[in-house]
Length: 524
Image 1: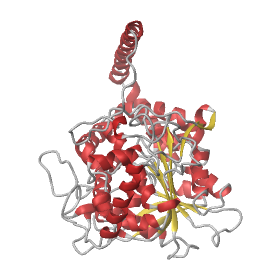
Image 2: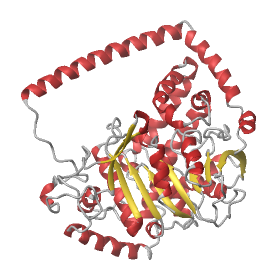
Image 3: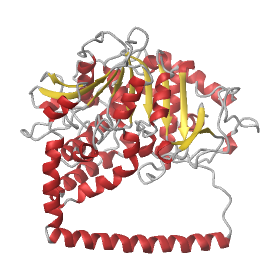
Image 4: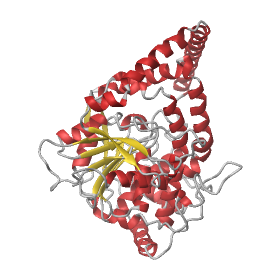
């Protein structure tokens, strides 16, 4: 359940929320937080001066940095440095050497028919398989990590190691086609983005071809960001393969409407530009600066050289550009598989209720800064109304009755594979990839998600405010992210819990390794 009233640390003491607690608007996405009392004039003036000072300083630093980079590039210092670093990367990322140093890793050959983006050729993916000291397969299901956008199996290597050593799990982590240490996309013909069906079939093949694991075994998936979308696409095509589901801040499937242009045009374009700038050394500098804060929580299974070097290869920019489109294909399939229960399909009132339901807990924690886990009653800035809605509130009870009725009807309906849920930029194709939703074939069955969630244990970690990513996660996106959390928890009956992390962004939520490990240990 979303939160039991008696056990919740967030239960309000002023009675249940009413409709008057919320803003009313006639737009499609009217859900906005109630404003706080306006600050005083003195506070406004001080804030204005502070903002001006920060803007001036940022402008000076930005201009100075650009001038310095321009000078270094024109004098060939940066390109020569990049050439030297790329040669070192090549040695550090030699797959034969990595396989010798990591006996838990191996290359698995994927047949040509599994992934339509392989150009009709077989390819090899890098798999990392870690096991506990004591064989617990009879007690604990295996765990699989479908990777996020622009990440690879090194990114969550510490999560994997601790799940095996502390949690006792057998864990599989892998790189999709083109990602990390797997084979690159074929260059001829022009690489096409993998569809949701492609990455789902690839994941299913890996799960059924791991030595020592029963092909019919049910799994726990721990998906970060796009990895959660890959997992739900997998469920829509390969039902009842999962017994546990950890949604680690998965992107709301409504992104296919909210961020369609960004992911289908702007993202691939940006990756193409950055790829062409590799010779300047600027992408390496950007990645080095971006990864510094997270290095302490990544672990020591791989070197800093390997972590940064894998992001500075041409393969990284090509694949990331393609996977922006793959993400949209997964969202499109997820919307179709939720049917009328998708947050893109419900009316405004239902969306408000879903976005306002209380989490199981609201948590303050930050491992990289040494902030220990604390339960808080603090509400995030993007919360709706003045208090959370509780499961026993009259309007929530009425909504759940309608929700359960829809569940029963959804099982009887055939999912429309021809309809796209994209808010397409012009000109538009039929779907992000392929002729049918998710890139499936016309004869492929898409299975509803709701009945599968009923049979799973669900845990959700959500960075409710997405601090630092406000341009991407608008209030509209945050409402849908919260509504999606509630949707998944409600569908799982009494075996689902959502946790909000009010001080963490989407980028650093997955860095909370202990939190991820403990959430996973709650599932079996």
